[in-house]
Structure formats: structure tokens, C-alpha cells
Length: 526
Ligand code: G4P
Image (cartoon, rainbow, N blue to C red):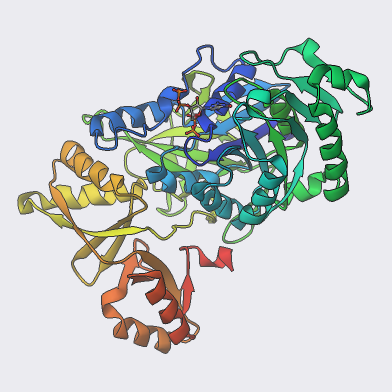
């Protein structure tokens, strides 16, 4: 078990859409022999154009089941890449996937620098101190000056950075990268990827070989390197593992340049599966008893089959096919006869799996996102917070004859994590999302999968805050006084819905006895 755990590296690649996540994923898989055909990962992407083409979204959801996890072996390590949808409307799913990984690689576009979604994703990583490596991509384009990018990364992402490679110019003039650790220069030839003989060993940067190969850029590189050594501390793996320091690499995913250095360092320094916090204690991966949690659920595309696929992250022990496991929330035993894993291009039924692995389970409605499975112990893993949606709409059943289907559909879809469900008073059902597209998806799926009809009525809220107070009376009073702005989440926790940031802030100021939490798992954030 120790060997199996130590050789696993489970991570996600995250980025603002278009920075190059898909391209990088594909190149990493090529190194592992994981895919033979270029473009295989690409097809997984939620397109940027077809926002209203529901069939297209459905088709792509189907594909993304197959690539939700991609596994391959490299230098004796078993690497599990958890896919995160790139479209900004699907970021809730991405947040949840981040709870199931042990580290992340963040891709940043060298021309655009840190973008909005990069910041949001990093906030989630920071909440749980997830170790982060950064790949600055698209060096073959005229990018921003690298020192400026480093400052921006540090400032906007609130993390210390340490370059491990350094670019030699960029755009038309891009010559390659200098590996600060190995003291190598990898030369870049336009239209070509790096080849072994184009690695120059330059123990001493004053070597005239450097001038021969990169011309006038050599002087600049010498200055840059002197500055880096002077400004940045030595790279510390402990700091990286604690989530405080991000090593930075430069390259071009499209040209497969700088990717090998990234992967080689990744397998060397990235963490193997680590302990997980649960409500009653911490769970160590090497414990003999199995435990795991569900972080993602996918509906079956075939409407004749109502079953769904639940993705289980294994946290400890050994998962076995057909063994009885304890479903903590429902307090019942469940058995999975056809669990599958995702090695390379194919999905195959497996007999066992280890901590760090992700297993797909067929589910007939027993499992919800956040559920814990164990061998009998009553523990629940933490770390599946709901974040504030940005858009809130009341969902109205437009076919009262089919209200059973309506309620079932809404319940299933929100359990799957397509959107968040809130209730207000006795009858009002509110659906909150991070993007408008989800309402189209919900309406379409309600009709096609559940035979129910609905419409959405916009509501004026734009922020949700989970509220608590040490003073129960004060809380009740606040909820009465702000009745129109109070709803309950799916677990019955009270939530304050604010129209604007300004209104939210003034409520916070005016009600010091009430605590406002930005996500549903407030203990974690405090
Ligand atoms: P994403 O998953 O983060 O959304 O990004 P993706 O990999 O799809 O990359 C977005 C675009 O950037 C793609 O172009 C891709 O080819 C391009 N790209 C990725 N890496 C590099 C790089 O190192 N250099 C340059 N110059 N471009 C890069 P597209 O036109 O949107 O798609 P396609 O027509 O190339 O498939």
C-alpha cells in the first residue's frame, strides 16, 4: 500500500479560459503515452461559441465524462489529472474538483497575465493550502516582461513565487528557456519542439557558447539571472508543499516547449496523496480501512437510463470491487459491482484502487456531492463548500400536472451541482448559478430528462452569505427583520441574499453580532 500511495500524483490543471490548459493537458498525456492522437483532449472543451446550442453542450458533457480523469504513467509515477471544465459558466464544477486533488498546475498566458478566473481559482487553492506550480504559457508570442509577470503573480495571487526556468526573450525573438536549477539552456526553434542535442550545458553563464547561440540576448539573460539570484530566495520544497511558494516555469504548450521540464519537476516535487480533514479527525492515506468522498456527479446522457456516474476520490485504504461500503449520510451499506477507472483513452472496470485514485461509480440516486463512503466509521470529509452564486432566479413550474417530475428534476440537477438550490418561505424555490448558461441547461434537461416544464423569474440578488451568530436571539431578529432577503440552502442553513455589494457591506456594518460567511463551510475559512 505504501508503494502504491507514494507513486501517485493526483492534480488538476487550472487556468482562465484560453490560457492553454487543454493544450498543456494534451502535451502532458503525450509524454506519458496516454494519447496517440493530438486533439483528443481538445474535443472535451466546452466551446466558447455555442452558448445556446444545448445539444452541443450535451454532447460535450458526454465526452467530458470520459476525460473527467486522465491517468498515465511517467518515470514510475502514476499520474491522475482531474479535468476541470474550462468554460467560465462551469466554474462551480471546477471548485469542487479542486477539493479532490493534492496539487495544481496553474497556466497563465504570458500576454494577458493574471486574469479574473485565475484569481478566483487560486483563492480556492489558498483556502486549503494546495501546493501550486505555475506555467507561464505562450512565450512564442510577444509577452509581458517576465519580471513584471512575476510581480503580478505574487501580488494578485497572494503567494510567493520562485522561477525555476527563465525565458530568453519572447515572441518572434524567443530563443528558449534557461533552467536555473540544472543550468541548462533549452533552445527554441520556431515551428520545432526542443530536441535533445539542443540542450546546452552552461555551467558558467559567461561561456561564449551562449553568445553564439542566443546572440545579443545572452547579455540580458546574464543580468536577469543575477537579479533573480539576488531577489528570490532559494527554492524550498517545504514552502511549496505548504502552499506558500509557487515554482514558476516558462514555455509554450502549443510548441511542446518547456513542458518536459515542468513534468520532470512535477513528478519530483509534487506531493503524493496526503491526509484529509474529516469532521471527527484527520484521515491518513495509509490507514488500512477504505474511505473516500464523492466530488462530482454526471447524469447519464441516455434518457432511458436514469443512472448517474458519481466520481469517488479515494482518501485511505484499499477500494475493492463488490465489497460492501458504508454510506455515512444514509447510514446504509452499498456495493459497487462495476467501478471503473480511466487509464489512457479507455475506461475499464477495476478490481481495486488506492488513495489518490478516482473511481467512477454507477449510481441510482443514492449518492450526492460531498457524500463519504467508509468501511463503517462515521466520519464525513470536509471541504465541499458552496460558494456564493452570482445570479439568482425563482424557478416556476409551468405544468402543474407534472409537479412530481418538476421537483424530482430540480432536486437531481442541483444535487449534481449544476446549480445551487435555496428555498424561501414555504413555496419559493430559488436556483443560484455562477453563469446564465446554466439556466438554459436546466430548462433543457428538465424537459428532456424529466418531462417537466419550468421558467425562471429573475430575482434582484447578486450575493449570498451564510449567516450565524453566537447570539441566537440576534440571529432570529435579523432574519425576521430582513425576511425578504433570507433563504435556506439545501441543508437548511440560513443564507442572507443581498442585492448589491454595497447593501451587503452596510448590513455587515450595521449588524456586528451577525457573522456573514462567504461559503457554506465557514469553519474552514475562519
Ligand atoms: P484553455 O483550455 O485554457 O481554454 O486553452 P487552449 O489550450 O484551448 O488554448 C487556447 C488557445 O491558445 C488555442 O488557440 C491554442 O492553440 C492556443 N495556445 C495554447 N498554447 C499556446 C502557445 O504556447 N502559443 C500560442 N501561440 N498559442 C497557444 P485557438 O485558436 O483558440 O484554438 P485552435 O484553433 O488552435 O485549436
